[in-house]
Amino acid sequence: MRRHNQTNDKNRWLGVLAILIALAFWQFVAVVIIRYPFILPAPTDVLAAFVSLVQKGTLLLDVQASLVHFAIGLGMALLVGIPFGMVMGWNRRLDAFLDPLIEILRPIPPLAWIPFAIIWFGLTASAAGFIIFIGAVFPVIINTYSGFRGVPRVLVEAAKMLGCTRSRDLIRYIALPAALPSVAAGIRIATGVGWMCLVAAELFGVSNYGLGQKLWWFYNLHQMDSVVVYMIILGLIGLAFDMVFRYYLDRYFLKWRTGEVA
Amino acid sequence: MGNLEIRDLNQSFVRDDGSRLVVLEHLTFDVKDKEFVCILGSSGCGKTTLLRLIAGLDAAEAGSIILDGEEIKGASPKVGMVFQEYSLFPWRTVIDNIAFGLEMKGIRKDERYQIAGQYLDLVNLSQFRDSYPSELSGGMRQRVAVARALALDPVLLLMDEPFGALDAQTRNMLQTELLAIWEKTKKTIVFITHSVDEAVFMADRIIVLSPRPGTICTILPIDLPRPRERTSVEFALIRRKVLDLISQKCSIQ
Image 1: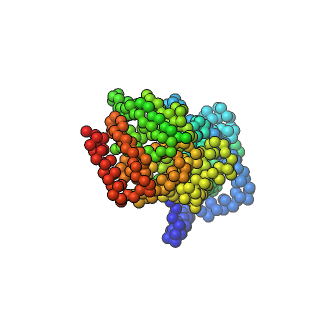
Image 2: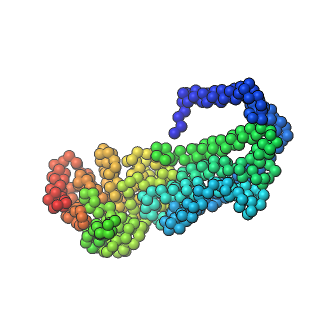
Image 3: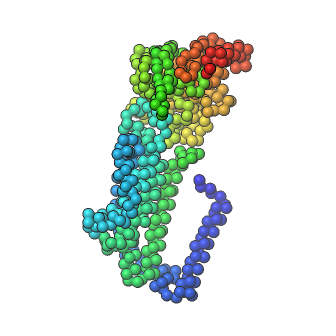
């Protein structure tokens, strides 16, 4: 639970302080000890690279391309993962039918699918999306599944006593809302995993833009200060996703989940 | 109407080791329209099994359950149920919980809110109309559950130890409140409890079950006029009579 009080606001400044100290230390090590920007560019180098990248104006195109790849992957993961998780959580026979298959596919690292992604989709945004999909779909399936499996029996029976007897209605009015917090947790995990797959998905040249693509591009040019710029942007966007997601989830679910053990 | 006839009901479960556990055996009794019947028994005597059969949530192995001439073959809105556990839908506000059954019947929003509002008044929780269940105390949740069950205007209300998880003071208060609701709505009520005190306070008739297998041990009409006084001499005498009967005839040997 969130605790908002004065101590916490003070503690937040401690976090800012840690970042400032890290930056100063980084600057010191880069400029005084290593003195070789290829091995370790200093924060000031990174800032300069950032400014020149902004002036060139391709940064936004990179963000845009990456968001497209990400949206394809995550969107497909939700479209496939949520229905699979639902039917498996609701129907024990379908669970028994599908579970072994999913358990075999799940441990294959998403990056191992890259060769087939290229063969099936070519060097397209869909290929990158496919890798992100592989990374994101399993957390969605598993969390949706456990949400549906964990619907309290008494709620289903209470609904039946109130005239909600058809399977379709029970899923819509009872199982889905009861499972929603778990489904949302799955989407949040999938967002994180999918974002991590992004760099690798863009490494193999599916587009001329993209955060991961540019990171690799500048590495090949030995412009390590620009590489760091893209690393930081990747981190910040990932963080922003998580914060926005958490903000809306808390607002939506805290209404009825306060006092419950999640 | 709400005439319930239970005829020769049998139910058993198969244990893990394959042997059969007979839970209910040759259970036969009637509940008259508008009657308040308490089913009293120790834990494990099959009370909840019996109630689930009447509710239509489980199917009986043998025997029949007839409500107003029609055999019960599945959950039906003619029968309302209040569960022992908290069973409100946590994602719905109080008013939307009460209106749930009406929503399933396809009744328009303003009309179902109007009906649900009446039942909310009936359980004296109007000021919690838009609260979520997690914001309510245990007693309030069970009152909403009663309102929700009544909102569909069932002929029979089943209650499975609805006040079992509450503290003694709240429980006494809710018993009085339930009796008042019963006076107003005149439903047939089958109320399960393991508390002799609760049964004597509420019931027109007490059906005492003896355990393993669950059979009717005795049926006791309670003739005390209402409102009943827990501390009165008559109350104490009847309570003692019930307790004596149970310990002599109805307990596990």
